[in-house]
Image (cartoon, rainbow, N blue to C red; front, side, top):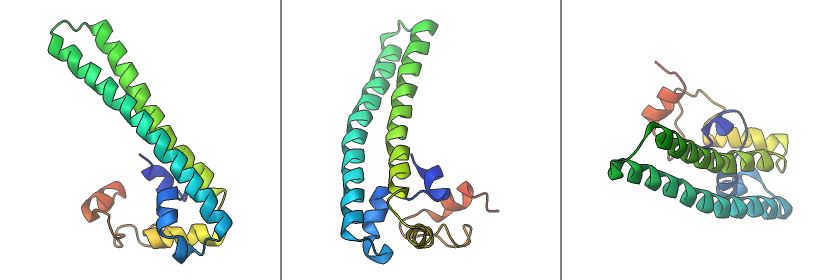
Amino acid sequence: MALLAELNGYPGPAHVLELSEELGLNERQMASVRTIFEGMKEDAIAKGKELIEAERRLDEGFKSGNLTAITLTELIAKTETARAELRFVHLSRHLKTIEILNDEQISGYAILRGYGSDLCEVVPEGHDGEMRRRHNACD
């Protein structure tokens, strides 16, 4: 949901918390990032439930056998609105997180996550190498 933020230098709160020692976060920064993360988690769960419900209604529309093009359009619009709202939750928290870190921490984050090095060769721990190469247009 937030890969484009990551790849463009906007750290995510979850990974900042995971890397807090390596980044040298102070207590104020830790508290601020933790608040952002907890709010993101709460909002993402709520928006995720809305997306699941919208997908369920879309599925039910097909199961009913009574789906029209107009109803399908409405169901898709509601589903995609729910997906967009969920994505906003994630991306907006990257915007908030970057305000808390200094330039050294942001560049350190990029290196620790594997974004500050050769994107085609270095695969950060926990990432899928094949997917990373495909996302970064590596041959």
